[in-house]
Length: 135
Image (cartoon, rainbow, N blue to C red; front, side, top):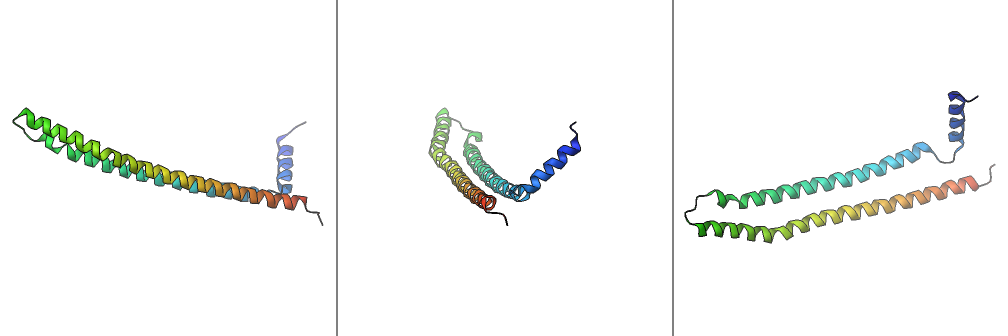
């Protein structure tokens, strides 16, 4: 009959005989998760900073709208100037966001390539150890 204690003992025996060390594997996984998390957090911080800057510039450009104007032509000039300034600044801001995304993408690719290389090296070492004659 199956019982939980037998299952636990057999699992512990299997894990103790495994050439792969779970503690080392978990440490490696946690290390990479930490690095991925740092990339993500840095990217979010930079995007937030860029968003705030863009919003502040856009709101500052709205100041002329709250000033009293006597002629409709003056109001139209203010509106035209606002639209023009936004049209000119938008590509700059979008390019800044694109640079942040590009940087995050490159850092992520580098980290993934390193993780793949490290995993391959570890697998090679484990295979060598497992296939070497026991003394």
